[in-house]
Image (cartoon, rainbow, N blue to C red; front, side, top):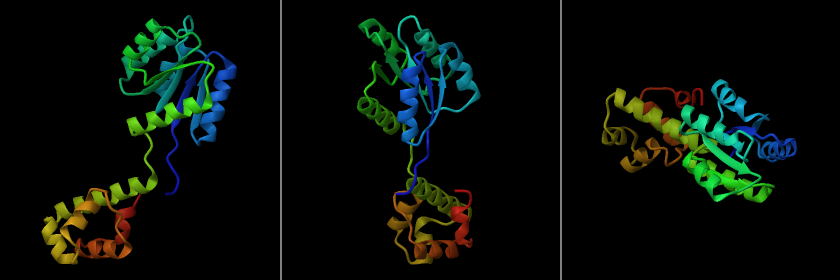
Length: 200
């Protein structure tokens, strides 16, 4: 499978060493990283730019816990991974109440951080490989064209000589269509093959 979409990640941490370490780990993973030292600035940063993940230091006295609350007031879905230099049950409970995806103790271990990051990516559906995305787009365009003609799956199957189940799987993005299958579908739907791939 070829390339993956990169994530935009915001790292909010007063400790320059931690911020640089996280930036290095994330950049090596192909992600775009912005670092902010002051948690009070993170809401403005999130408002002005599009981030899929925020790594936020919520250590006592940093203002991170308050920033997490503000983020939740602004966006209930944004994935926030919380870090802390001083873990406590109370802080952990409060952090999870504010829907942090995970709560990590500093100093951060690269392996543990990457495991949490990958779990967040999977659970939040943040990273879709390009082949999966292509199948979904092609399938959606075939279905839209079929409905606009209007043709049933059975009628399209009759026109193309393809099975109903294969066309259905392609429309749902669960199967990749071969070039000859796409050619048959394009002919039956009276469109160019290139239509399925435009602006993908």
